[in-house]
Amino acid sequence: MVRPLLAQAHVACMRGSVTKRLLSSTASKAHGSASWQGRACEFAQRLPLLEDRATSLLLVSCTHKCSVQGCTATFLLRFQYTYSSGSTELLGAILHKASGQRLDALARTVLFEPLGIGEVEWMHNADGNAAASWGLRLRPRDMAKLGQLVLAHGLWQGRQIVPRDYLDEATAPQIQGAGAYFYGYQMWVGRSLVHQREIDWAAGFGLGGQRVFVIPAVDLVVVLTAGLYTSPLQGTLTSDILNDVVLPAVH
Image (cartoon, rainbow, N blue to C red; front, side, top):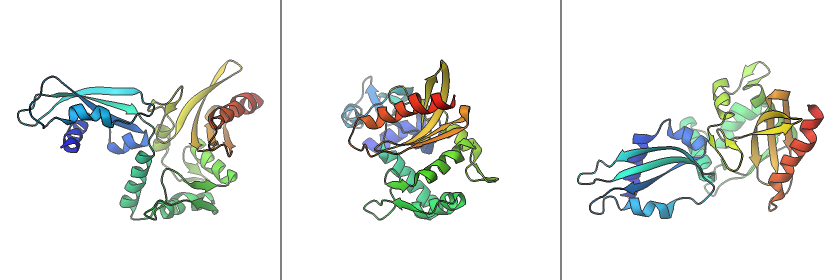
């Protein structure tokens, strides 16, 4: 009973597609209020126990009245940022179903081969499919190619590899993320202050300190690699290198 009712409220209130919610790691949760009858709306009490406790901030809220006969509950549905590898895995499943290709084969055809990326290692999930949320290993020069593709709005050697409109949305703030960062579509969006000048950037973050920063204001792509997989320095050290070394040198 929980899932159909939550889905009903979700569809009624959502502004934008499910895919966009997954791209921006935007989860939803519902809370019940007012009076209600029977067990039909028991989920209103149970949902707070099921919600993800990861960092999350409110984006949108709206109300929805339950349409189950005899139920007078009103739900508050809130859309919020919740970092979730599961959302990315669902996106991978959507691509697999829509294209009829495994994720690694699709990426090779439409992305890696056009960019001249040949040597990759990609870990697989237990079902044998390439993991959408983890385990892709690239050489730094190939990471830089992906950053350059984003910097050029999806254009590579005169060919539009990724639609410009999509990348414009992907690198723009879609929701407040963790800490001082915003979140776009599977990309972090932030800013640095260099010599009293604010510089915006978008970036791909990988576990251990792998980073690809795209900085349009100075026409720059910055690639960092590290092995800080269990260290809290993987976040602060990479930011320090960008803010204290790289950007002052080019600004």
